[in-house]
Length: 197
Image (cartoon, rainbow, N blue to C red; front, side, top):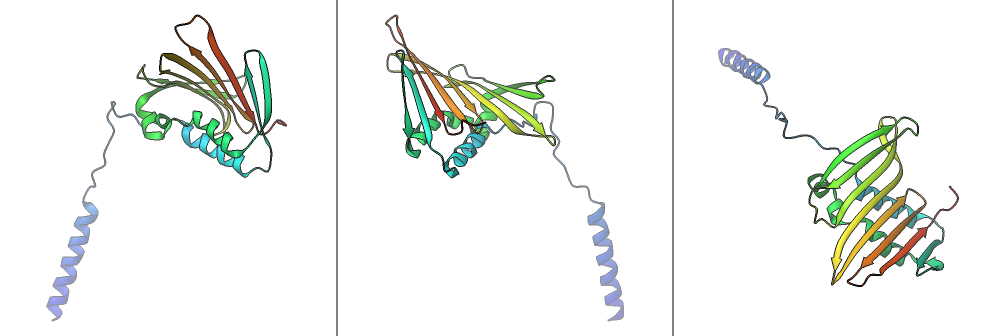
């Protein structure tokens, strides 16, 4: 029995030692597999919408069309419907990283970085996304604005949208509709929930 315990203990120690000396394979990325860290545009806009939902403030909508301005308070449902223009499925993380290329630069004067995203597919509905952000403690969590350009066909019309989201304050949707006729139909919608900053 004594020899059995001694043999068992010796075998256990040798086995544990072999496990410690084994190398665990680690996947290394080759030059074609770059790790992407795109700004989470879709998630950021969703968090801004959630923040507006939590505020006890009125939401104002301004519409400019054919030279006339219309304004009034809107309900949460209309706010959500308009904000959906900023939440294209292609901007969700996985699609965004596959379908867009990124360029960025830092402005020493303003201390803001610009992250410029361009659609790889020229037929994509969302063609461009620009994020202006400032780092705090090495993380880019101080967003100033997000700008987008969308292009798509609707029936016999060509639609161009320029969307601008000012963090914590408002968003704008500028729409141009072109048809076979020479005139361009344009409409600007601005939604404001914080006009004090």
